[in-house]
Length: 79
Image (cartoon, rainbow, N blue to C red):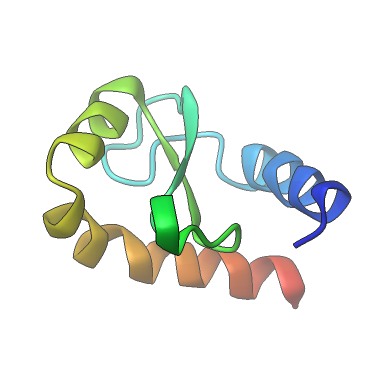
């Protein structure tokens, strides 16, 4: 995504999913499910600080939980 498209998507996600997509608390962060060398700006989820920290502690385990959610977010955004 271009920087402008990425910014638009992040803004949309904050409005569309203002709560953590794991526990339903108020979301503090937008998290890239695929990041680092495999970063994909389309794989974003809204998370509270607790779950964002957990997602970074065990990236592979959380990837399997969060990737389907991120894919649903992207599909909702583009449709």
